Length: 506
View 1 (cartoon, one colour):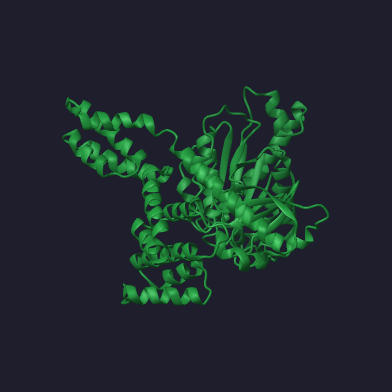
View 2 (cartoon, helix red, strand yellow):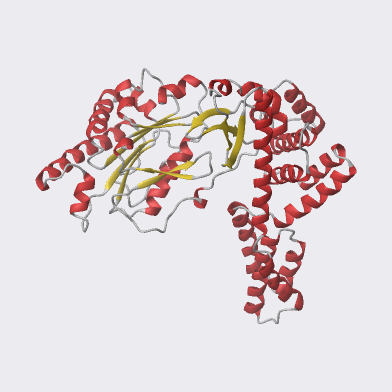
């Protein structure tokens, strides 16, 4: 543990902020110097600082809807109620301070709880259910629980305990259960506040563009987990080039007011110009909140989760689409590559039986995919070195040729046509996922053989129902040769350390 006091850490964080370092940079420095407790303290300081900077920033249309949204975003980003009140007390006038206290109370009481928070609460609640001798133990917890959704979970658990123990419910328990019928529309109120705030941000952007001499009108705003997408329509005769280079100017003009510290990405879509602004309160897109595991299976529609786009819409990637038979993905440590791989394999294993999907996995770093050893979908144990990876690739090459012989015999050209003809005994797709192809293609003992096998697969395997996914942390153009990149029609670029690395991947 370091010997730094909280005061030392606070002064250091404020000094780094004054030097222009981003929150991510400061957290990275903290991870190198401080223990976990002090790292959390740094995160708390940054959250309080961000909230405070938003409270005091100048705004043309400052109103209580805007203030409510700031407090709501602070709550869901993890800022404590005490920190929020301290900032409001120091920065706001008495009228706005009174409103802030009411808004905070309302948000804490009515905020819709995320699945992660709910699951964690249920785990603790289940322990109470197992250990409670009387439902009165849970009534005490319910009365001290502020959030109405969590409160109802406790009341329902108390009712179960009462039934289990043969107790007669008291008036307080009956009243608590009855309240469940009057809170159904709370999340609609929160959505309305969000819509009002988005409209205000969009109109502020339009006013600023008007100040630059650009005639435009606001269309709408969509909010995804990591971006807000503001859509505007340029006036007649206004060229997109007048807007295209304004990113840095908008940070200077609106960064504090709207809440962004990097230039927005400005692009054109049919009928609009869009400004994609990174959210300071970036949200986690939880796997279970989006994927579909229950709809009817279709052997000719095998998909994987692709993510959530800037409009907040869930995106699937079809492995039956000839445009994305094979995929190359790359990104630095912590850039999301491993999570993408795990989500893909987990979804395939949960969604499809082995008669629909087989898996061939390679993980030479023993970090991302070895946890899937034992899945019935595997054609072989997860490969952990270059030699076993080569054996898997050679097996896939042989399987590819056998499948083409079968196609020729029955008069079809690809796996989709084959499975339509033999729907009662379909040919499963094989998805090969290689976690670190850079290491494999750099191995002096096996790289030539691995590259030869890969080229055979990338050239023909797609139509045979074999999808190749290659991932790497280091997209070196001298190792991942152009022929490999060009035969991977699908590209997934995660966060990288240099812009040119994205260029190599894409």
